[in-house]
Image 1: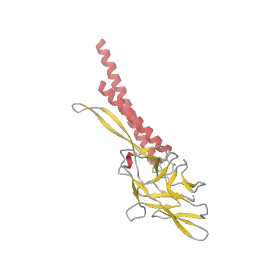
Image 2: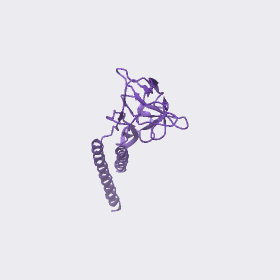
Image 3: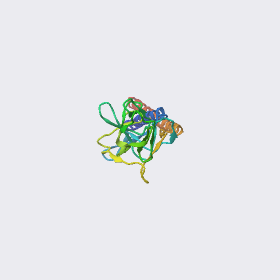
Image 4: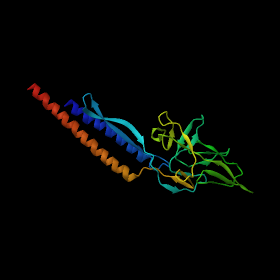
Length: 242
C-alpha cells in the first residue's frame, strides 16, 4: 500500500510539472521565434524490476518550424528550416535565437529587443534601404549604388534540443548540444531566409489546451489513487487496532 501511495503521488508530481510546462508554452504562444517544450518521463524501477512510480526527466524543447508571417519591420528576417541567428551580449557571450526582429543602433549594428547584437552585420548611416536575400546576402542601397555589406550565416548544432533556454526565444550553448557549425542559407536542401517576415511561435493554443485537459485528467486519476491507497492504509490500521 505504501508503494501504491508513492506511485500515485509521483504521478501527481509528474503531471504538475507537465502542467507547468504547458502553461509556460501558452504564456509564450505570441512570442516571435518561441519554441515550445514538452516534459519527458520515465518509470522508476526498483531492483528486481518492480515499478515504483514515475520520475520527471525535465523539459525537452521542440524545434518544429513555426509559421512565417509578413512583418513590415525594416530589418525583420525569418528562418525557414534549421539554424539560429547568432547574437552577442554586452559581455561578448554568444546567444542563439530564431527571433529575427532587429533594429539598427546608432553605430549601425543590428540589435534584438533585449539589446543583443546580431553578429557580423553593420549598416552604414548613409544606407537608404536594406534587404536580405534567401542566401543571407545583406544588400544596402545608397544614393549612387547598391552593395553587399555582409553574408548572414546561421548556427546549427548536432543536438539543438540540448540548448539551454534563457527565456522567450533565446538560447545558449551547452556542452551537450555540441559545437556549432556555420550554415550557409539558400541551398536546395538547406535553410532559407525570408526578408520582411517573422517566424511565429510553434505553440498552437488549441493543441496546448488539449494537452492541459489530458494532463488534468491524468493528475485527477493519480489523486484518486492516492485517496484509495490512503483509505486502504486507514482500514489496515483499524484492523490492527481491532
